[in-house]
Length: 156
Image (cartoon, rainbow, N blue to C red; front, side):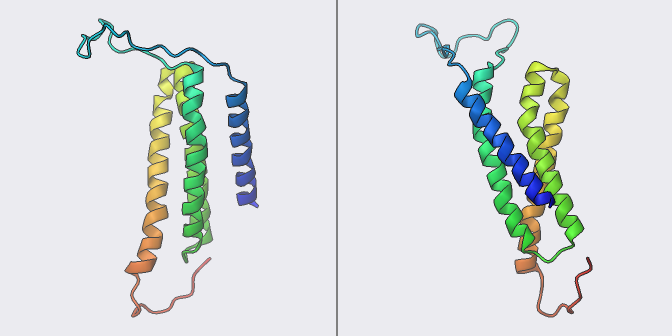
């Protein structure tokens, strides 16, 4: 039930992203003047160039397709591992929350408050920890479990 709901929510997010991409206006890209040397000094205020909504939607467009696909494939592999259903469910939910935080983080930082940078860092921590679980658990079951281990019933 929860996986069906999460799958529908991911498909809904992907549909919104595609619709936003189709509706958004083209903004002219600013190019570097040809007479400016490569080693020109930085401006006094430092490098400040916030991305336009168009540039941010281009980046989101790629990530909105890549992250759910990667996590879907890894979650299917994790589902073949013998582990408790509760731990598996928590791992999937944390991965989904991390994806949502990662996709919304740049928009919140740019348009709401720079204080949401912590939100974005937290999404990286969540995604990284879930990827470690997605990779480490199947690898341990493939190569870490010996045949001499006593057969124990899996507690659910």
